[in-house]
Image 1 (spheres, helix red, strand yellow):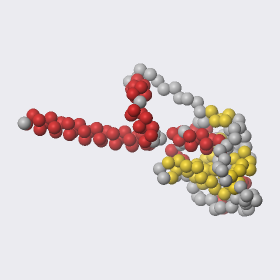
Image 2 (tube, rainbow, N blue to C red):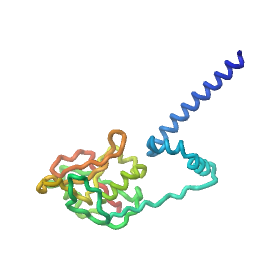
Image 3 (cartoon, rainbow, N blue to C red):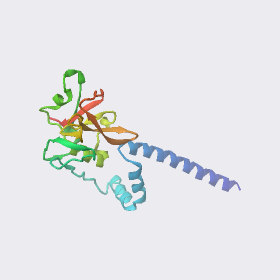
Image 4 (cartoon, rainbow, N blue to C red):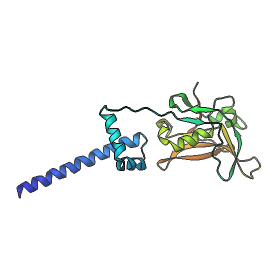
Length: 199
């Protein structure tokens, strides 16, 4: 009887340890951009798990894929919008160290300040936003509490006679990355930034 009790206690300790380790793993994975869907795929794909073990044990190495974004392609357009201007910029290799975000200071300008803010600057267009939404693990962690706009593409609401014109923004809310739109006739929040190629 005593042996059974000891064995039961050992199993209980093992489960408690596994739960603690799983919690630590989940937190670390979330920090690196993992989603529950990606973790579930990893748990169910034994070949992928085996490959990760080979990397961790030194038997293989990771070669990072290049992410080439076609900034000449037509951007995503919501059903109720049209594109007023799309600044084509050829193929763009994503490298977060070569992308900057410029804080937008509303008080600097009169009239239409947002347009003036990005004039003559190497701004990124909405194709980059589209690509990042499809590959959210590429989005820099520093962007999480910011509204990052991509004014290389300017949208207009259909049948608005040009009144409702704005840009697409990348924003993190409800625990996920989303696309939002901000119109030039609205007041811009202090967390608004402009995405551009770093010089």
